[in-house]
Image 1 (cartoon, one colour):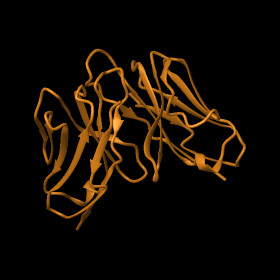
Image 2: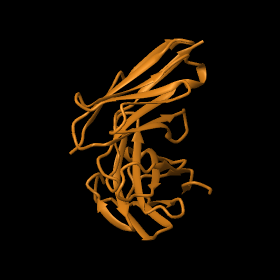
Image 3: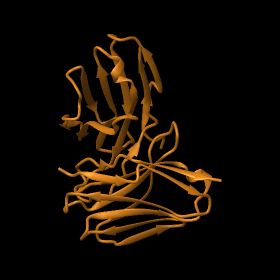
Length: 112
Length: 116
């Protein structure tokens, strides 16, 4: 089955700097890759997703890139702000009827 | 839409007691997932349903755990008897699954369970 590895497990950045979180997946048939943000005590919420027919997607300060050949995808946050501090989860799925497989999460701290 | 609804939001119980967690998926969604989240193990999938039918329960840790989905708008996760190591946040999530893989999965607010 699918396996998703996520790195780093923790990340600290200065406010205004960029943050990059990377994930690798094992199943080349996976074709949907969402990213979730979970603030302390809250539920995971989708912030951006990408499908395998697209190499990059951007939404304001966040972007996701996908390299199908290498089977990895990354989340990029630019001009980080304290409210970006949270745990970020990547996930992968190959069929709409199968569950998402999540990475272990990255705890991002943005230091003011 | 109110989103995925879970109850109770917090539950404190004593070891050996039965615990029932409830979930109402988003109307029209046909897939429902139960997850457990702890610091040590992260977000674990326990079981999921498609069209009210349990598809994969391999993530259910023990026979003490059971889940049902009697209709499209309600699911329960039961732990009987509960143990301290069951303490965790339990999330329910739902999505509209079909031929495409792009349907978003929405999480409920979670139930924070503490077993003493």
